[in-house]
Length: 212
Ligand SMILES: [Zn+2]
Ligand SMILES: [Zn+2]
Ligand SMILES: [Zn+2]
Ligand SMILES: [Zn+2]
Ligand SMILES: [Zn+2]
Image (tube, rainbow, N blue to C red; front, side):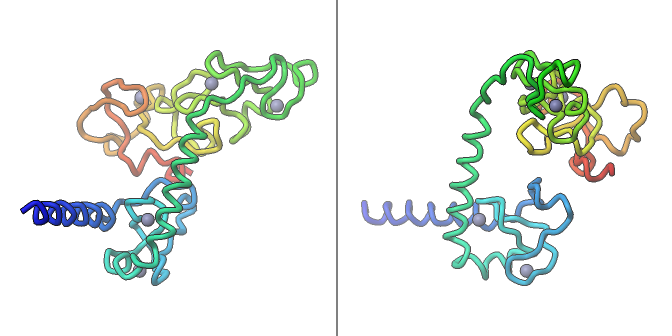
């Protein structure tokens, strides 16, 4: 009886693991997908699905994913380890840069003129770096110099200060009147970035690539 229940438990765990692995996810907002090039690991066709465990390896169908599973197991584990590591690095607060030096280009205030400074992370940017797509963001993952990404217009240069594009909810209020109603989700809900209950953009419209 004990043996039976143990094997049932093991069986349930296998089923659970398989369910997690084989459930096809919608495309993940990974940076390499942003050019629209994502190909199936097996047949090189366009791949709208990613392995839901590692969210990295792409497949066109559950058939191809199934065919590749034996092969993929090792790299899947590796991908997950790397993602964990990246997440841990991303969560470590960056060192505050020395006051009076542009964090983007390292030029001092005297040479670069006025420096914009984020009170939260200490990032300072000169005028030129402030308008630059990758250097022009502070180190705060959910805001740029205190301005929440979810309240900004989707543009590709609104990244999260770590070189990763912001991919959360968006509800840019200042431009509220400009966007067509079909761009928003039908019912208001809590924004995943600021928590305010509001109408947020549909997933396909929050990606900056749609707008450019
Ligand atoms: Zn395929
Ligand atoms: Zn995987
Ligand atoms: Zn600079
Ligand atoms: Zn900041
Ligand atoms: Zn928000």
